[in-house]
Image (cartoon, rainbow, N blue to C red; front, side, top):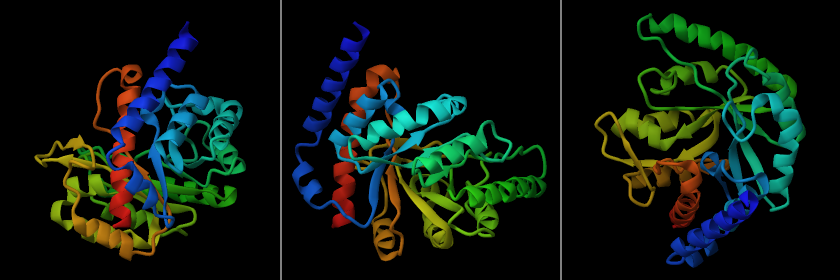
Length: 301
């Protein structure tokens, strides 16, 4: 009975996603750029099995995924050796790749860090998103940044030994190292970008940088390992995340992206739906379809 409900949910999800995208899907599919791999963060598809998830992402039209393989994610770090090969195989059968492994790793001492990265490398996953460093604002910031730098130094050495790239996402908020971008880039720029780079998130960069985000974009060019797309409405300190088709991403960003030398993955994040995850699967797939079609047109225009 449970399996039948899951199959019915998946079929309904795919049908809803396809219906939402009918208005612009033909143009978007024809205009899909080959320069970038368009992937999506699959956090919100966790109620699905590996095969169901892979099928749904393929039906929506992405080239690959960014998968949370972390505490509370699709696979717990302690189970990576057994479960990650199955996960990769499910997507491989659909012609999809796992381009970013979202991890709980920010030091060599993070639980199962070395095993996770070695297994990922063996399975052809080229990069992983780091977990964040955080500030305690009751203490001076500068010494804490140096402490983060020491952790990153050891992690960079392990990345080089394994042959995998870490990407650090800029995130908005008063306690995150990397919110202003300048702080984390001070650390990241010391390393070969093949092993430590930035995942530039234009949504969070605009929350924190407002009109100065082009400076941040310029700053990360030497170490740009991924681009994250999300959008919001309003900016009173608590952004209301929304569909990229309804938000405020400036036209200048698309011009700068196309004029840059960047040709890596572009990860679309759908973070604006809330509620019970199992009940929201069909809505998330529909949102992914709508936003992917919009993104393809934006990149091709």
